[in-house]
Image (tube, rainbow, N blue to C red; front, side, top):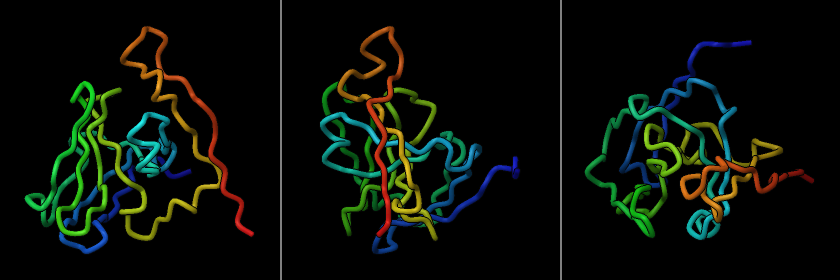
Length: 140
């Protein structure tokens, strides 16, 4: 088993925003969320520590969206509109990075993705994070 951090190149659809990430736990942290925003966005996110993302090009081409408590910061390319990453409300020391932006990775590479209960957000109670279910992909 490879225990070394995995470095990856990533970009938005049009390439205006390019960045590199270091996944300290590989893709073991992937997840989706049931909150109103994530439900509509539909992306699978992998966890990255704040210090483990480096913008190579186009950081100034990102736009920010916040809602509700305005704690989470969701970033998008101003040109193509692709969600690239967000600073998490559940753990502000981490970014959730859109796996579809990572070079050579598709959301359909993962047969099962845990879905977190974002409707009952862990920051709103003492119960902690709960898994709402599992999203499964079975190629035909």
